[in-house]
Length: 471
Image (cartoon, rainbow, N blue to C red):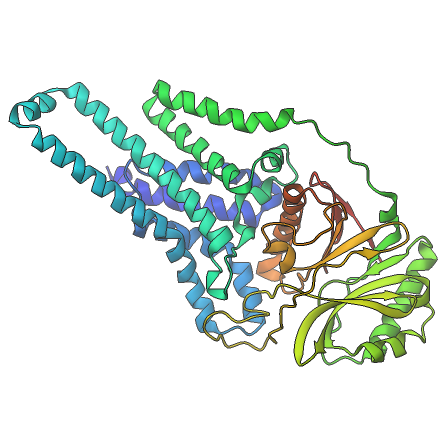
């Protein structure tokens, strides 16, 4: 009896832990993501309440964001605000369950009213019919499981696509989406054919009808289960484009160095120049060197940099793109600088400012991070001798639903910073890479992912090739 009493909470805890561990240990435990919706939906035959949904979300998302919270703590974000996030996220995630529970109760009251209004004889007839009562109970269970599954779908949409709306835009925490764990598996074909919301809905409906089938063993649930399974099977018959790794990848090298402020700019480029010359001795085919986002952690002056790099022959031999902040008309931008023949030929200012670390939300949050201005630049096409690239800077890739440039056939070069994610936040680095693979499949674009830990060329099908490292 005690098990039946505490089963809902036990199953919700197991479900939340499976969800979090699938992301924590994504390399080995990615398949846990198939277990969490099953235990969630099997936890009860009734509508999951707002409090129970909050309980589940507090554990699942609270564990998931530990790495993010730790990184924000290192950035000196207000402790009060960090504590607030642990309650804000599960509260928001539990809202769909509140409305579905209220709607379900309203429908039940209407059914009871209709039942009583049919008269005493009809009521007696209905009560005496045990078969009718059994059918009614079975139908009520199915409705509750379906309602919980649909609420879980809405829960996921809120977290991954809407959660950051207080920052001024409908954006979410994409690293919490289950599909990023499939980015290098055959399952990825489903979201290359269907849009994200429809694929997510199919994913949860599959578990809805699986749980109903296991509990009720009726023909209706088995038919729906087979129909939904077809949607997962159809993408496997899609003719795959033969993807060949471009030869120009051999010309690209990465220099994952971080120069904190204050740092002498002359010393920075002296060190970078030496590393480039060392790299050219091992591979003289290198034509482009890339540095991650924020590699130079200070606002730089274009003329000053050009004066310095002219003194080093390394910068006349190759092209280089590095990221730093710069001032322009009293605005601070997060920018990438394109260097050709020891001269800065172009500067691209980031179009999207990251919430909290680059732009404030609707109320001020205490932080030592400098807020930047989001530019109205268009993403440029950076043309080299054998290839062209379109620059994206971190959140422009992770928080955008769709491609935000005019060059759909050109590969994206994404400059990202994962330098804050270490210790308890190390798993976030792996999730960032998986999200890049996910985006490459969704957008059907090749992506050069440049970060401090690992840098890869990611194909349209999610496969990755490690880039040369000059360190």
